[in-house]
Each structure stands twice: as C-alpha cells, then as structure tokens.
Length: 67
Image (cartoon, rainbow, N blue to C red):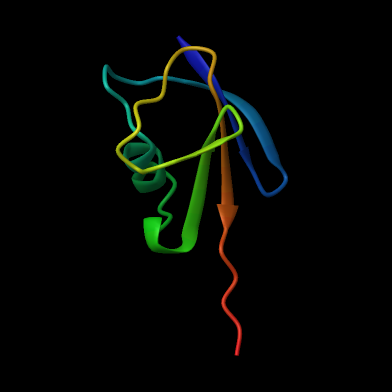
C-alpha cells in the first residue's frame, strides 16, 4: 500500500509503514510542525488526525508568516 507525497519540489510515492498511519505520523517522520503546515488529502483540506489510505495524494503546504 502506498500514497503520493507532494511537498515543495518533492513528488514521490511512499509506502504506508503501518496501519492507521496519519498525517501527524507523516509530519513527525519528515520533522515538520503541524503548526506551520496545511495538509490536503486528494485535494481536500484535512486535519492531522486523518488516516492516509492506499492511493491517496497528500500535499503539504508551508504556511508563510510575515510582518
């Protein structure tokens, strides 16, 4: 079982390492903070507790702060 990860210039297929693998698990694996990322699953905004399923496309978008 695998999913597609899109993040910045990255566009790769990744294996789902365990059952009930979530967006939060993915962010932790990539050492990214949920506070600074927006996650999309198959084009829809999702929360970090969303489970990644076989064939999903996960897009991570960095939130930019400015002043």
